[in-house]
Image 1 (tube, helix red, strand yellow):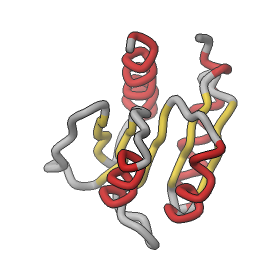
Image 2 (cartoon, one colour; image 1 turned 135 degrees about the vertical axis):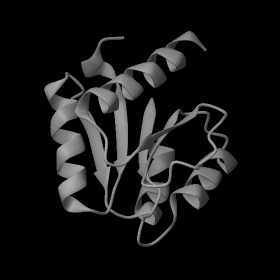
Image 3 (cartoon, one colour; image 1 turned 135 degrees about the horizontal axis):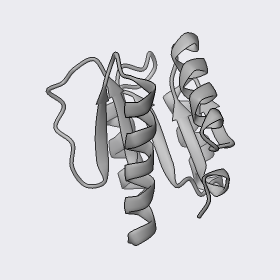
Amino acid sequence: MKNDQFQIALVEDEPSHSMLVEYNLKKNGYHHIDHYNKGRIFLTNLPSHNYQLVIINVQLFDLDGFTLCHKIREMNRKVPILFLSTDSNCKCKDNIALLEKPFSISDLIGKVEELLNTKQTH
């Protein structure tokens, strides 16, 4: 798949962070990005979308990222998940990766590409 064919969900409640991530994803050819500023709204919309990647801020205001991840998996979704977190001690497995804040744009794009390439091979 080309970058512009991937559907990505960004679940981030901090406006400056979401703008930075979305801008740089688009700059690198990922144009199909749905931004959600609340985890519960994302969960409501998830069944009607076929995301190839979900990027989640671990410290969401309404629903923490770990709970959100668990609910995604309960829905039998094997979609890769990229956590954005200030906590470097997060334990990630099962098609889940961590990008520690603050992060560089090259690290963000590298993790996105890594997870999407993993997704394509399964």
